[in-house]
Image 1 (cartoon, one colour):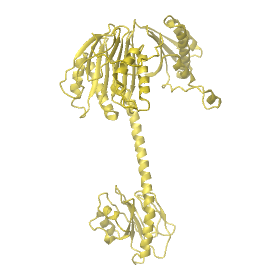
Image 2 (spheres, rainbow, N blue to C red):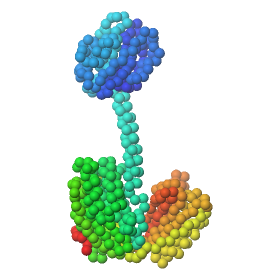
Image 3 (spheres, helix red, strand yellow):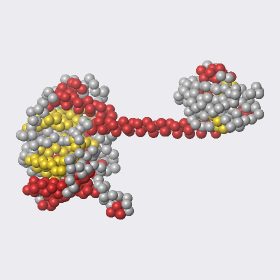
Length: 564
């Protein structure tokens, strides 16, 4: 006796011809409709599950096609069935029973495991036209006891495979979404004569709701924007994209920060999902004078460190997307040479440690007070937050934007060299001549080595040694920092630097490739990697004086108030 069972499974039973064989078929029960075929077996025949065609069969074979829909009352009846049942004992009002009767089904055997119907074995009348004996029913019942768990296992395996494919698809879509979202963030921070901008964005998930931007206005001023959408993940990312686009488009015609927020709010209210809103801070800075106008839509108050200490730039206003017609206070201050400004999201201040304590405003203010410049401030914030949180996972998106006004005007120099082996020494010597008056001897030697290594990498790997492809070098000098940009026509960002391991190299498990980048990262204060059109850029930053390593042990309470 033989049959096929399964909710689309591949469970297979071989047949053995007997003197008096029944006509088998498999009917499937489950959460989704299914169709299974069965037929009269012959010796050596094999029958497969759902949708599969049986192999060649004996003449006169019949095929039974039974569908049991998820809402069919037959499923409830079969859960408590005692074993093999005559088709006449089944509920006559069941659509599946009617179809089985029409196709000549004589007896059914429910396949039940863990109280759940996972399949049904349906058989036609015996060829001898005699009824099914007690031994036949016992055999079918034993068959069902073994087949049901095996069938359920097959179903679970198929479900897990389907779920794995679905997770992989979602992960791929999130990766694409992440790449798209990264396009909304500045690929390069603009050059503001005498100013230095440092930024960091780290979403809590693959995509997030924080954003920042620096928008160069037609009159030479710069609009600095930082925002935070409630919630995390994909919903927040979608609202973030909409808000960012509205801010960009509004800044083309309106430059007053309070008016920008008012217009964006009125545009956002009709389209933002219920229970979501956006906090946003807008500063409009004149780089030449430091004159700054700002307005705030419920965002964290920015810190300003000046000669008098650390204060917060206070302005009031409702978050965007909550109430139409909201008005936003607009204030003004002057960022003096040497001043440092930090814009940040609550992902840093509201991060908890293992004991449930928040990082808080006091620690954030202490970091602002202790930092030498923007890069140092961003690095200290991220390192301090990681040390504070320990093993606690990141709870919210983190955004940091640090603006540091230098003590003097920035000086710029650019030159190019051909991609010929050995020209890295020319790059090193020319950069050294330009920056030597601004750096102590030890820091100058470190920068020279880093520039030489970076230029050699651009010549050999970026431009592949082609003399017709130039390496361009740009040097920017302020009283606080030296920035050297080396650009080539490479097609991609540098991979993460390997940590040199001599034992692994001697064992042939690691090459020296990547050791140069490891060296460069430890010679200068910051290394950044970017793509601009068809050019690959490596930006090296060396501060004219090393940042202080010590941080205050007990930060004091924050001082809130607008700077005059």
